[in-house]
Image (cartoon, rainbow, N blue to C red; front, side, top):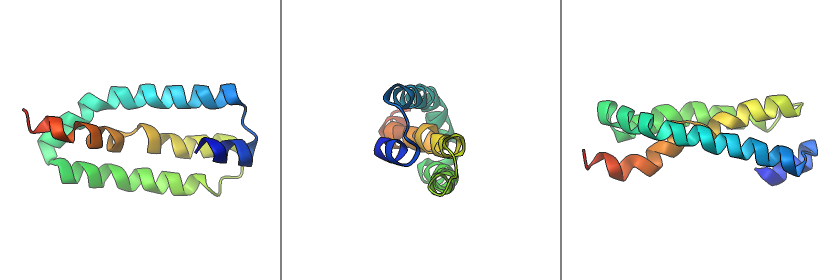
Length: 95
């Protein structure tokens, strides 16, 4: 992802670092929400319902004409519940 941002939009290293930092912060906040959603609707449904919008957004980022749209489309794929559901899935069986 970083290489694509560097090559396509000539993104600077500090700007890429800032983007990835905030994406990780948002992902960290989604962990408790993903566990809660997984307990309510199940792990498979949580994964499906969060992967589909995330994949659509990531596919829309590739043909984006400018950096702003590319970041807006790629950010949900890095910071939504689908990352959290993968990590918290073993934890939900403990509840």
